Length: 293
Image (tube, rainbow, N blue to C red; front, side, top):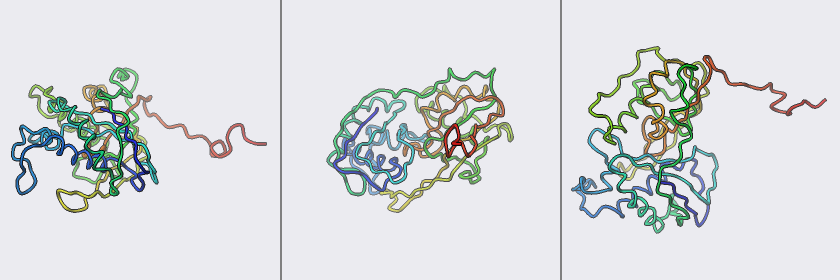
């Protein structure tokens, strides 16, 4: 589903829309879908019958069955119009009309700390077009993929990977994420969760990585919680032909943690082995081409 919201006044001071939109979505979806009482901790007493609980709580030991599709962070943004998407997985796809209704209800709530009112200019129920598909992978011609991390990526690992990512950990995160979302969609047929590749199977030959962090206010936890990750791009060498089973799906599921906040959207492109980025001479970048006599 793709939405376009027009705001009554600019939304300022929000570089990354993910947490703001997710907060609006959660409050509005509860109002639109949940007619059951909650216990003392605020949890639904009848979660199996409640669309809100099915979407925001998910199944046991499985992630939330939706991904928020948002633009990359943009510093000093002043937004009068917001475009974003919500992708549902598995049985939660039947609740698409309720998701649309939630954002209609959200018009009266407002968005952001200032509760800026908006109206829905467009709401399309359907699957967004992919920027790249698995058909682009030709294992006979390359062992290198360039990954562009469009929205910050947060990986699961015992080490701190925010500024020094591991290629093996990145591949492991991709395998795990796609496996989990296929399980949510009932597509795994009881196959075991894939293990991490042996150490050194994949290696980063070039990277331009930056650490990213913001703080969000958690109403449930009643405290400020950090969201951390990395963005940028990496060229990774390895046996990518063995990973073809998840490469295409990763564009839909995102990779890593906090995908319901819009994190972890990454795209890939084939490169020749030992691929490098072309960097023009400084005089061309500053003055243009040809140089001034």
